[in-house]
Length: 591
Image (cartoon, rainbow, N blue to C red; front, top):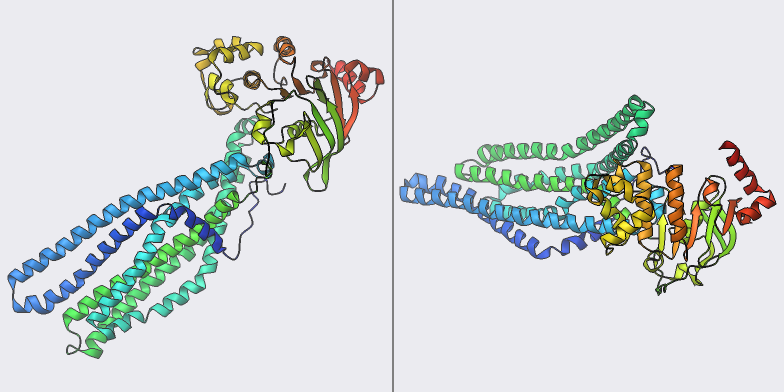
């Protein structure tokens, strides 16, 4: 799909959907108790701090003219006390909110990871991995402070404004009106900037996602890059993406910095107006020097919450773009899931029936059409045919990694769409074409699908697939640490470990998708002996391009033209001299 590319921007949502913020409140409400404590501490700290200008006014207008030294010492001590207490309360509040922010990050990230574990293969087929990773890591970090400190600070700054206004009008009403005169201009600036600022940060989100997706893709494919000497070309692509990100960031910061720029200039103009009105218009009779100093202090304090609110607003606008992406991921439908009233699939024997199955990855582009076949329990079935004919699709549908477009798939007579996924997949062993090795020990990797397996069972599975010999050659044997994707192992070794992992689960239905494609001929012959024994009593589906490995299967299905073109044993298909005969003969000649 077109969107499964690193340089395709995701759709921007416009206008802002308030439901995103309401959903974020679910995480905030879980932290309501510590947030309430932090808010009360903040309010108390702010209230104590606001008394300082009043003390200054009283000292200048009353204490100093009266030359009352004991009173001057007392008010000086009170001023110091307000500062110390205010700092202590603010520190306690900061520690509480740090914990709250991390708890919110944990909750959101856990929900994201849990949801990603349940999303179908189709979701991952359609998106670069880097664009998924950035949502779980970067975007969650970006919104945490807004969802914790932002809420409290917003309420607190509003209260600060109210308290400051009360103190201002208590000192002088006329000069208070001078301070408030700048508010309409500020609100006009905010109104003009809000939409452009939000769109700019949405674009930053897109360009960051694109750059991260290409970076992840480049790291994963570094060997291919170096083999084909694509370093310079890839550097050019990354530079282009980085430049686009930088341009988007600079544009977003331009709009973001316009807000504090406006506040700073308005605050300066208001402060100038206070001195102008107080000294030249009102005069000493109406406004004493202490009153003017107190009002100028309150003016600075009044515009500080305005500046803080604008910063909170900026952070909110920035985070909205990330919230949209986070909730977009959480809203991705789990299309392959247990239906309502889904039942447990009882222990199976392994019969499989495709009943008029049609399937398409994209609507209208059918890969399979009206597919019908029945496999008896214990039969070994080989799926062969040209690349892209739908062989892997068939086995993916049996495992219900995708939902069929039409028709039904039955296992022991049970429609797999009506049983619980866990009860279905727990009775199946699936070895996909990509042999993925997780970071950890070899023992852990083989035990991945059966955590309660003993070490003896792990070793027995490894011996059965001829993996025991090379594992024991490592200094630490089965406790050897391997890197993610098994980079220190050969591709054949990774496949053998994956084989052991699959067989250890003791499945009733075994699916092998190109399971021996990276194993040398000698090891494959040894492996085949073990497999022949292990396949007894199990239904097996084997996809292999090397037809010599499937000659002994009970039945061979030639997949082509959106269905089964030929079906029969190796000898029967060879006698028909059809498509299988031509393919097998061509391979024999090449060998």
